[in-house]
Every structure is written in structure tokens, then in C-alpha cells.
Length: 334
Image 1: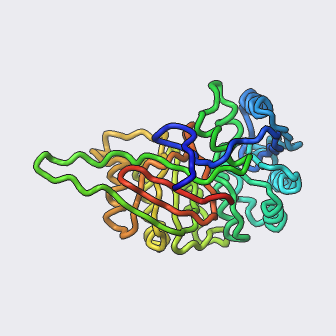
Image 2 (image 1 turned 30 degrees about the vertical axis):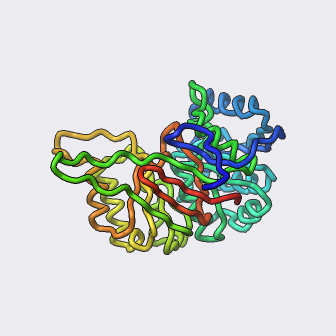
């Protein structure tokens, strides 16, 4: 896109057209899902955001614990309400895990929608997919798939440069898109001609998606958005390729995938293949999906349970372009 500057590596990048301003931003940290067990990571994440010059406000129940959750259901719903009322530039979850699907009926959607309209960006990953898709289904508002405090800012190593650059772009309203390099094509026999370079241009489509397991759990509920003509992105962790295929098949049989203009597969990590698989692997799943869909299926999207992740506006209208192995999602200034 003209006028965009690549901020990071040639393979994964955020795109912006302006320099970041010096003003501090207000970041509200809250815990709508699982309990924070790693308190040291929580403290490191807060300190790193403060070291960047930001004002970090911590929800009163951010470190609450009730069985596996960050407080009981009422406690976590109240935390979402306080995040919506905080007036913060970004409401950032402490961590994912599990907990949001069980409280979706009680989320104050009108308050969240109002907060987004007034400039608060809700950011998170993993279990946060349930919140994001429910907000999209109930209000149509845009949230951001991106980092969480503990795993992304609170690790023992410094935060990933690309992730942090994309997060800063969001804070200062300068992010316009994200680009990545598609994986190289499958090696062909020497006597077989190479396919022509891939070209794709989708002028307009609503970007949506997130964690595959969480997304599938919402199918058939009022919290599953209807996005015909959308651009669907998916990722997951600790799910064997056969389970990934089973969930993709559910979306295929439900007619969700065929309604999209493109399917973007992010990072699928944390699984272990077994001798029983006999060659069945993630690439097998991708090839099978492509054989059953007429819409393009792109891989390598830098998003998921990985350090290097871009931020993606869930619910925003985007443009998707592919030239050869270079892919770009562009949404301009939101």
C-alpha cells in the first residue's frame, strides 16, 4: 500500500504512516478468564508497560482466584464492567485460559460498545476470542486480537519487538495494516513445472476469528457472529492436527467456511505427532481443506500462541492483497 512504512522485519511487519507521539497512554489491566498464577510475570508485565511511559491501572480483582478462575463469575463480570468504565486507551487482559464462554450472557454489551465508541480498545488472545466474537455478534463493534499481559509483556525475556511495535501502533492510533511472508510452496518434482506466482486481491471483507477451539464452541449460539463475505483467521495451541481437522470440518459442514472470501491460518503450536499418525500432519489438514473449498486458504499468519504476533482488528473491514509470497492485510486508520 502506498504511504506505509515497514516497522519491523521483512517477513512479519506492522505498517504505519506516522511517528509515535511522546504522550503516555492509559492501560487498564483486568482478568476475565483464568486466575493469574505467575505473579512474577504479572509484575514484570506491568513494569515494562510503565517503563514505556504508560499509566497502568490494575483492576481491583486482577489477581483474584476462585478454583481455576480469576474470581467467580460475578467477580469477572464486574471486572469487565470496570474495564468498560475506565476510560482507558486500552483494556488489556492479564491472561487467557478458560472462563469467558460461561459468562457471555452477563457481559454488559451496551457498556462495552459505548466504551469502544469513546476510544477504549479491548485487546486479548486465546480465551478472549469468546468475548470478541460475542461483542461482534451483539454490537458489531471492533476489538483487537493481540497480546495479553503475562505471556507477552511479562516473560523472563524482553517482549518481542514486532508484537510491541504493533501494540504501540494501536496505542497511538497509527497502525494501518499488517504484512507477512507466506511459506514457500511445496517442492515439486524436477520434471513438473512450478505454478505461477500467487496473486490475490480482496477489496473489502470483514475480518473476524481467533482461537479455533473457542470459535467452534460458540457455533449455534447467539454469540457466534454471522459474517458472510468475511475474512476468517484462525489459530490454536495444544491441539493435534486431527483435532484441528475435526473443528475445521465442523465449520465446513456448518457452511461457515464457504461463506468467507478467504481463510487465514495463523500459528498452530504445542502439539506432538505420534507414530500412529503415519504421516498425517498439519500440512495434510491444510491440503484437505483446500481441496474442499473454493475460497483461498492462506497460511503463516503471524498470530496465535507465539511471541511474534501482529494485532488484528476483529470486526473491522479490511483489504487483503497477495503478490507472490507477500501478503498484506490493510485496514487504514480505524
